[in-house]
Image (cartoon, rainbow, N blue to C red; front, side, top):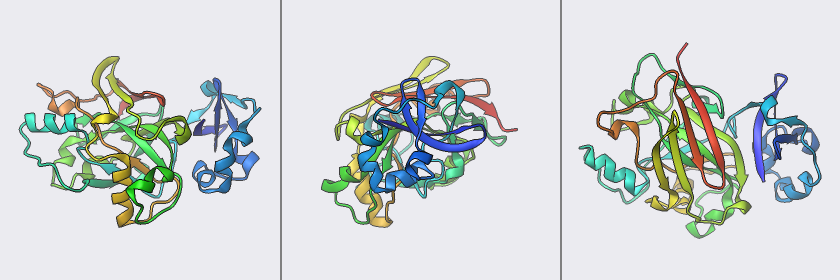
Length: 286
């Protein structure tokens, strides 16, 4: 099942994708947000709730919102693909593989939805793409064991963890370059975990103006999804609607010779097998 957050007639809501449309579920279930629904017992009977519903609106008539518009936490993995780690080394940056997953946090205001603009800030001309697999947490937990981690996954989506490179490299802690507003694209929807077998290798491709710039698969991850969940949940309680961004593969713009970055007027796409296509125009900060 595909679940999405969206706006229609100026009203924010959420629902299930039905063909080329969406069936609104907020009023039908009594849950104001998709995160509320994921946290409820109703999530387990979602198939019965959606069965037989017709679309209330066409996808072309709604405004997409980030899949989880205001997650409590967006936990992001750093250099979590071996092919990306190797390109970092080839670019001359000395980075050792760590024994534990390196992570940072994004804030929800840094997000932008499918079809929404990725905004290049005034202070940078080095806005880079990073296509990534997003994992949405479905069951709360602290100190989750790796063996139990898949039970805490509600579903998956596409993410473009765009980086403002100069600000990322201001210090060893990269979060400043990862939290500019409207730089983290998230969507178009969440595919529920029952649709994708745990650990399945998924092809991931990023395109800039139609040209492929990243082409890899999730089998190149250094730290697996269960490892990321276990590690993060040791630090803080993961709650339904939290998002774990699992890292980007090789092909980012700053590693190219010469470097290549997103600029206003560009269109960037992240497509992940069995999930969908996230598409965003790039604009200058207004």
